[in-house]
Length: 114
Image 1 (tube, rainbow, N blue to C red):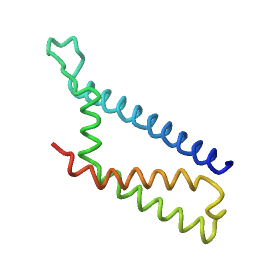
Image 2 (image 1 turned 135 degrees about the vertical axis):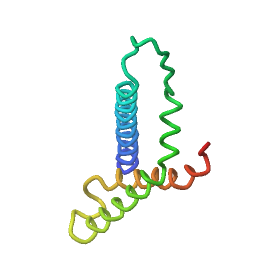
Image 3 (image 1 turned 90 degrees about the horizontal axis):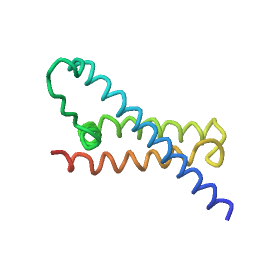
Image 4 (image 1 turned 180 degrees about the vertical axis):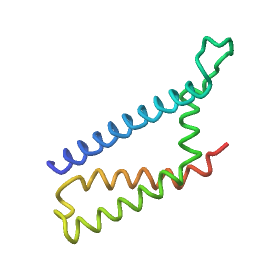
């Protein structure tokens, strides 16, 4: 029962971290787009891509995001098994869940491009 709670807790933390990361990336891209287009008082209408545009960028760069995540996760797992705390300690479950999300991103991302 304890392992189930720990696994659920790790999954929830991963989802929270991924959500916060996505929000940070979305905010930075909106700021950069706004700075490149100029202030809204210049008389031009600024139609932003919004949330769906940010998800579209995620699909567009799915291999660029997913493949390094898989490689770094594999490097962490090798380190943890041989020299680190082992697979039962540390953020191993978060790394495995991040690798699973990256695998789905690499697998499904190219097929969902526009």
